Length: 86
Image 1 (cartoon, one colour):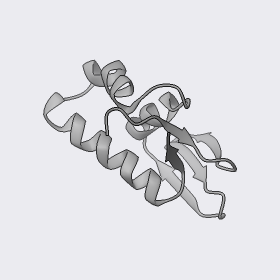
Image 2: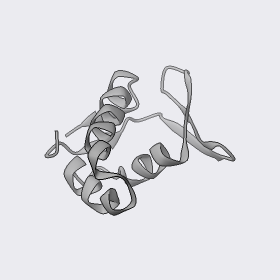
Image 3: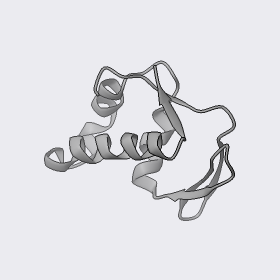
């Protein structure tokens, strides 16, 4: 997964809120993400791989759970049709 490049799917809308970020999928479903997930989300630019994103943010989080949490975040985003991988 570290070599995959996430890109936000066309039609995903996002809005900053007090609790984190509100995401609206192209199919119209609403999702909320907390500030930690928002940090990952904000790194998605269609150029950086998951590994590069992890390296950028790894110093801010507990390394023992960061990798698994990051993988799970991206897998869920893909299942919810919020991201695709290049």
